[in-house]
Amino acid sequence: MKKILVTGGLGFIGSNLIDLLISKKYYVVNIDKVSYSSNFYNTKDYKNSKKYKFIKCNIKDKKLKKIIFKYKPTAIFNLAAETHVDRSIENPKNFIDNNIVGVFNLLECFKDYSKKHKSKLIHISTDEVYGDILSGRSSENYPYRPSSPYAASKAASDHLISSYIRTYKIPAIVTNCSNNYGPKQHPEKLIPKLIYNILNNKPLPIYGKGKNSREWIYVKDHCEALLKVFLKGKIGEFYNIGSNKNLNNLQVSNELINISKKNFRVGKKVKILLVKDRPGHDRRYALNSNKIKNKLGWHPRTNFRQGIKLTFDWYYNNRSYYKLLSKKDIMRRIGKG
Image (cartoon, rainbow, N blue to C red; front, side, top):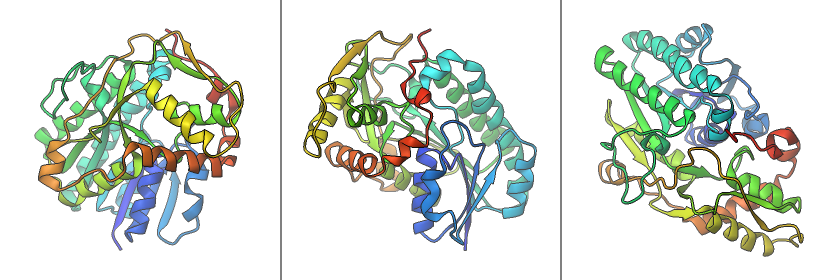
C-alpha cells in the first residue's frame, strides 16, 4: 500500500484530501501542529482506520525529517499553512514563521529524503499571490503581486519551492488554487461564517460594498485536481486550479440565504450587514486553469449552486462541529489594520 504524507491534515482542504486518498486505498500519514483551525472532528470518520496515522508535528520541527524517513511516503502534499488574510494583517509574524520558515524546513528535509527515495512534493498555494486581477484571468506565467502579508508569505514559499527545484533538482510541483468552499472549513472564512450566522439568527457581515469578486471552487473538486497533479503532473511545473466561476460576496450571501430558506425557518435578524472594509482588500481574483485542463485532463465537476447546497447541508447536519470551536474565533472581527 503506497503511503502519502499530508501536512495540515486536520484543516479544511487537508482533511478533505485525506478523505479522497483513503478512498483510493492510500495509507495516509497526517502531520498537523494542532492550531486553532485544526479540528479532530474533520478526521473522525477514519481516526481508527488501519490506513491512517496522525502525528502531532509542526513542519518547522526537527523531528519532521525522522517522520519522513520512517514512513517513506511516495508523495508529500503540503497544506500546512496560516491562511486567513485578516489574521495576517493583525499578526504577520505567524505567517512568516509557518509559511516561509516552515516550508524551508520541509524543503531541507525533502531534499535529503528525495536523494534516497522516489517521491514527489506537491505544494499547495493560492491565487492570492497574483494580487488584483481587474480584468481577464491570470495564467501560471502571470507576475506575482501579493497584497496581504498572507499572500506575500505564500508567494515567498512558492519561490522557495521553485528555487529548490532548479538548484537542488528536487521533484516538486506547485499548485495555485482559487477560493475553496465546502465541508469542514473553519468559520473564520466567509461561507462557513455566513452559515453559522444564518443558523444562529445573526446578521451577515460583508466587507465594504460587497462587490469583491472571488473565483469559487468546491473543495472536493480541488482535491481531485491535486491527486491528478500527483499522478500525471510534470515535475517543476506550476498548475492553476480553478472553476472559472466568479461571484462577489453579495451574490454568495444571497445564494446562501435562498438555500437556507428552503431548509428551515430563517430568523428575522438574518440580513446582509455591510461593514468597514479590511485594509488592502483585493477587488478580484481570477485564474486561467487551461493548463491543468489541457495537459492533465482535469475539469471541475461541481457547479456553485450544487456545491453551496452540499456545503450548507453539511454544516446544518453537523452543527456540533461549531461547538468544538472557540466562539471568539468565530465572531471576533480581526484584521482592521
